[in-house]
Image (cartoon, rainbow, N blue to C red; front, side, top):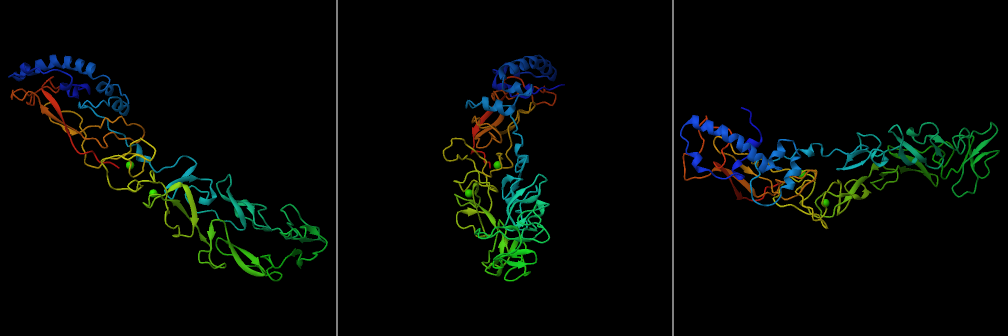
Length: 420
Ligand SMILES: [Ca+2]
Ligand SMILES: [Ca+2]
């Protein structure tokens, strides 16, 4: 026989008792009466249960219907909605963003690199400001004084603008008889092609200040070394290393290694997870009190609420200034029940068996909301009319559609259903 979903609903909820009908002795009578009543029961059920149970037949939105039926009347819900695992893709970032340190950042933020795979900051020779170019590569936006990105900005600022070939800019080449004057920061000497070096020191065809020029530091042709993530610089004729943007001499040595700075996020509740709206950079591990190395806290005022929370809670939380109740203690965007909680769906038609938790009927709704969270409604199927012990169609040949009045659902209060 074809069973409908309406037929699986505990019909006793909406129909009256009929104990006299239970005194049926033979299987044949039982079946015949069942056929007669089945049609009536289906009609009654589908009329009376609309729009709740019969919405299942037409594929209505289960969550929406659950919310709409939140009346607190204590009646069993019969067929209940399984909340879809909307959080299956939790952790994924919107298009154009990627996950770094527990939060989503733009794929075109050079502070987190320009590839979708890495969060390492961009680092290019002699670049002062960085960008992500249209090809998704780290590129130089501006260069340190005296350097230019003349051909490929993805390689950084590799051209010496004190040379006669690229004098002051990538487009200027000096005549054979000319030298290239370095433009000094104080403006005392104008840069560009000239007949002589004036007060500057001539090194080949370049005119430079050997006190400050890393390619001629202290003397002509003495080039200062750089290091990984650090560019050569010359101060008063002595070589040092200037770390690139986002890197620092964390050992305090101006010629030491350049270490990538770590991003720290304000952690108001001290649970080790901060918020992406307030950040700072510091040497690794040196964020200080109140700062965390990862972001993604969905309530930074409650230390029980944080990504990675493994405990389950039977009471929801509300953020400051909000009345929205949430059980998403682990901030993954979906409320998950503690494993092992069975949901009530229906009474087994032949034996009137079945039990489980029902939704809280709280009226909460929206993406990721699970109305079984915090629910204290527990349902259990039981024979109705216990005075007639022969009433139940417990024989294997009994009808598969429950007879009105023969099976009921009792509700009892339990501790709230834990979730996170
Ligand atoms: Ca926090
Ligand atoms: Ca969750």
